[in-house]
Image 1: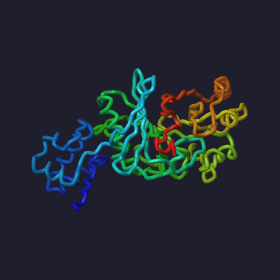
Image 2: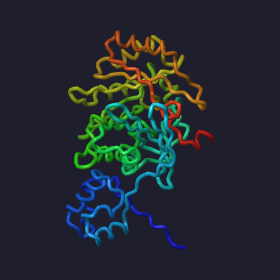
Image 3: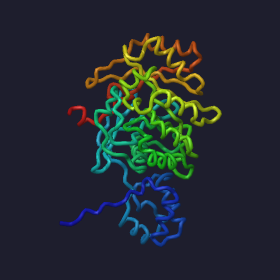
Image 4: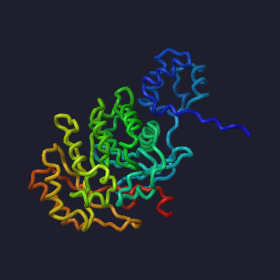
Amino acid sequence: MQAIITKENLLGLTLAEMERLAQDLGQPRYRGRQIYGALYQRRARDLQEITELGLSFRAALESRFEIRYPQIQETLKADDGTIRYVLRMGEEGCVEAVYMPDQHRTTLCISSQVGCAVECRFCFTALMGLMRNLAAGEILGQVLAIAADRGLSPAVRTNVVFMGMGEPLLNLSEVLKAIAILSDPNALGMPLRRITLSTVGIVPKIIELGKEPLRPKLAVSLNASTDEQRSAIMPINRKYPLSDLLEACRLFPLAPREKLTFEYVLIDGLNDSDDDARRVANLIRGIKAKVNLIPYNSGPLLPYKPPPFERVLDFQRILAERRVPAFIRISRGREIQAACGQLLIEEARHA
C-alpha cells in the first residue's frame, strides 16, 4: 500500500520563516518574500499562481508544501445576513466561524481551538470538550476561506474577533503568530485595533499577553458579580478568582484611547439583579473599561434563558449612574445558533 504523503501548509508561516524556507531550498531570501506576499496580499491558493517563482522552484515547493484553506463543510444564513460556517480542518476535526456583515464593516468571529476546555456551564461549545489547538495557519485559514467565499477584498474594512470556539489564551503562541500575520501591512494588513481577543480570564496568560509588543484589544468574560456566583457558572474562577483577575486587568497596558472590554452575559434570575449591577460597578472601578451587556443566547441543550429586556435596561441604567460605560449587545444569528456562546458542531448537538 502506498503511503499517504502529508504536505506542510504554507499558511501560518511568518515572513522570516518563508525566507528561511526559500534559503533551505537553495533560493535567495527574497523568494520567501514573494511567497509571503502572494499568499497573504494576493491570496493565492495554488503555488502555480505564483508565477514570479521559477518552474523548478515551484516544483520543489509542491513536493513538500501546499496552500491549504479549511474546507467549507456547511453554511447556515440568518435573516440579518449573518452566516455560520462549519469548517473542516483536514482529518482533525471541524470548527465553526461566523461572518457578520454590517453597513460600514464586516466582522469575522473565529475559533482558536477545536472545542474548549474551560467548561463554562452556559456555553454550548463547552459540551464538546477540548479536542485540540489550532495551528496559526488554521486560524488564518478561517479568515481567508470566509473572505474568499464572500468575495471580501483586502480593501473591505474587516474586524476579527477571537470569540469562536476555544479559549485563545490557552493557545496563545499560535494565536499571537496568527495575529502578527493578520496585522502585518505586508500580509493581511488588519490594524490591531480591529482585532479582539476574548478570554474567560486565564490570569498568567493575561499578564503574558500584556508584555507582547503586538497586542490585540482584550475582552474579558466577567459574567458574575461574586466569586460564588462566577465559580458556579465558570469553574475557571476557582483557579483564578475575581480579585486576581481584576488585578491583572488593572495592570494590563492600554493605548491612550483604548479601553478594556468586560463582557457580561445576563442570565435570568442568576446574575441580573440590581445588586449584581452595583457590585459589577464596584468591581471594575478604577479600570479604564467598558461593559458589553449580552442577553443570554439560549438553546435546547442548556437550561438557562435571557432576562426580560426591561431587566437588561435596568442593569445598564445602574451601571450608567455609576459612570460605567455599558452597551447592550444583541447577538446576531441566534436563529441559526451562530450567536455568542452557541457555537457547537452539529454532531455534538445530537449526541
